Image (tube, rainbow, N blue to C red; front, top):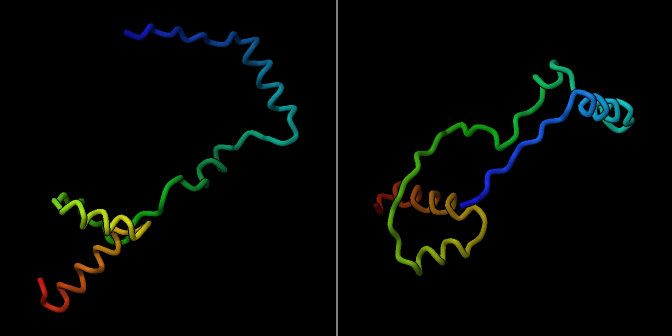
Amino acid sequence: MDKLREIIMLTPEEDAAINACIAADPDTYEVSDEEFAKSRKPGRPAATVVRPMVSMRLDPDVLAHLRASGKGWQTKVNALLREAVKHGRV
């Protein structure tokens, strides 16, 4: 079993010294609440169409071939299925 680690909090003096060093650094500044509110959230933008997650079983060789096509292979599979539906093959 792992030992519990003790969290050592800074003293007010240590905290003040660190903040003074940050304030003296010409390469940084503290972001205002307004700037923070305007900042962009990390991650990809929300999709216009939310696709439901699907779980399905595929033969290993088929899956390997699809994944070997590189990044975006799931989008390519979706396009293949869309074409099959469009042409009445499914």
